[in-house]
Every structure is written in C-alpha cells, then in structure tokens.
Length: 258
View 1 (cartoon, rainbow, N blue to C red):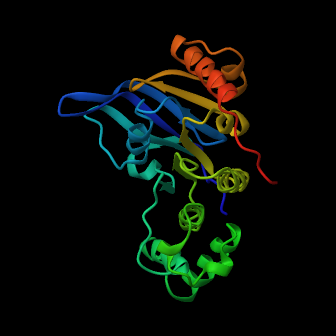
View 2: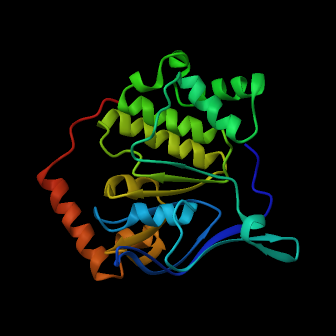
C-alpha cells in the first residue's frame, strides 16, 4: 500500500443536513486528521451514518461546508486537489450478481485497473480477507460475514488513504464480527486512515484512537479515546456510557471461540 504523499485533513464547518425540514445533522464543526482510527460513536438514530455520507461526499450538506485540505510543500491545497483516495463500506454491502472475484475486479475497473492486473490485485485482496477459496462463488450466496469481508476486500484493493466504515459489524455473530475487527486493524496498520461508525461500545474501546460522539445529530464531544472512556466531558456521552455498561451487565455476550 502506498503511503500518503502529503498531510491532509477533513474539515466540516457548521454543517447541516435536512430532509423535509427535519435536521438530521445539525451545526457540526469537526476536523479529522490523516492518522489513526477515528470512531464515530453514539446511539442508534443519532445521525452517524448520515454524517459519514457527508464526509465521504455521497451527500451534500444543506448548509455549511465539507472540505478536504492537503499540505503540498509550502502550499495548502483545497477541493479536488486535496481529496485523498477514499472508499466506503456500508452496513449492508451491495453484492453484484457475479463471483466474489468479479466483484473486486469491477471496483478496480472503475478505478482504471483492468485485465490481468485487476485479476491479480483482486486475488490478493481476497487472500488478505480469507476468501481465496471462494473467489469463483457467486457473491450473493456468501454468508453475511463473508459478504462484509468481500466488501472490505473490494475497498481495500483500491488502496485508499482513508476508509469509511459504517457499522461494519452490525448484525454479525461474534465470530464474524471479530474477523471484521481483525481486518480493520490490519488495514489501519497498512497505513490507511479509518473512520468508522458504531454504537458498539466494546469495539470502540478496543480499537479507537479518538472518539467523535454524536447525539441527536450533533457532535457533542471529540476527544482521544483514552480520555473519553475515562471521563467524558458531555452529559450525553456520560449517559450513553453508563447505559451501555448497565446493558452489557444485564445481557452478557456469548462466549467466543478464538
């Protein structure tokens, strides 16, 4: 994986997003840098997924500005010139009606890589996520966990500088979720910036470098993970952490084979 050639950051400046007059994201100002794993944490319905789509550029804000900035030498670039290579994996990935390998090849073709080069890179991507043996199997017949790994392989093959992940372990059993977690850590270790939404507190606590906490469409706290989990500064985050601790105590996770 090629390294980032110059420092970048993603800046949101008083961003709103509304549908039919309902503000889903409200007055968000936020800066996300190029390194580490940023976890967007918050309860269901907080606006995390919409915020991710705004960051990735799939949605345009109804107010405010989302911009990329990149330092190149002594100049600071903005707009398309500053935008790093990026990809996004959704909670429920869309699988094309073709094999697992062909799914990866299609993503590569859209980025300008085709022929034998796409086949080679596609097989390498499937090997990284443990799906080599299923390369020729129709993607839509894979299990939920396998489909999520395929979606990650499809994104990882593009060698993104930043990878957005929207609730990648939701609805997966503990074993499949743990496999996805290992992949996320491997991608981060390869040099890709991770920005991920979740409402799953233990996952966030294990892998986050910094936490963006969202409640009712607003970013109410952005802090290093170690500080956030020891002493959140907002009432919303404090209540969320307390509720999650109580919930986990009442509903312990099933044992997981390692």
